[in-house]
Amino acid sequence: MSREGSPIGSLRSGFDAANLRIAVIASHFNSDVTDRLVTGATTCFSEHGVKPKGIEVIRVPGAWELPQAASTVLRLDRHDAIVTLGCVIRGETPHFEYVCSATNNGVAAVALEAPIPVVFGVLTTENRKQALERAREGGDNKGYEAAMAALQMIDLYRSLASN
Image 1 (cartoon, rainbow, N blue to C red):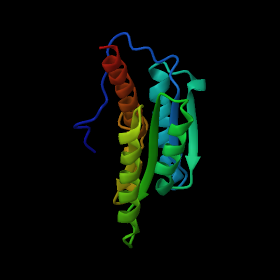
Image 2 (cartoon, one colour):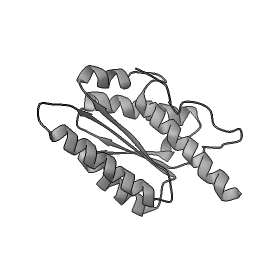
Image 3 (tube, helix red, strand yellow):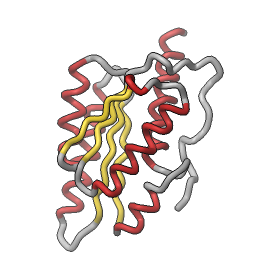
Image 4 (tube, one colour):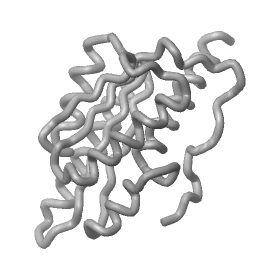
């Protein structure tokens, strides 16, 4: 698994995450993987100072429902960022392509209209082994990476707003 291009890095000095409110929207489907992604994301947020009460984990049935939930959560106007997490594993039918495409396009559409960062952390893998590799404990966890991207985007948005 490559970390090339990974958002894992640092935040600018002075970034204070203590009062952030983050929505982590995760699918139940493939929960052996998505539970690990959620753990990775919440670990990242905690390590960077987000208080546990500032992290709201919202579960949806599958990846297909992530854009709908992200759109609804966005309208609530109570979060500083939204992180979507899911896992779609290729099967024997074209269903994989439909779900991946709809999820990607749906989350992207929400993100383009959102005044806050909306991050895509959905795994699209060929098999369960690949998915579990991307959801392992530590910095290589794609949930952790998605959370870090959310923090970096919040930092960026704040920086742009102050200029």
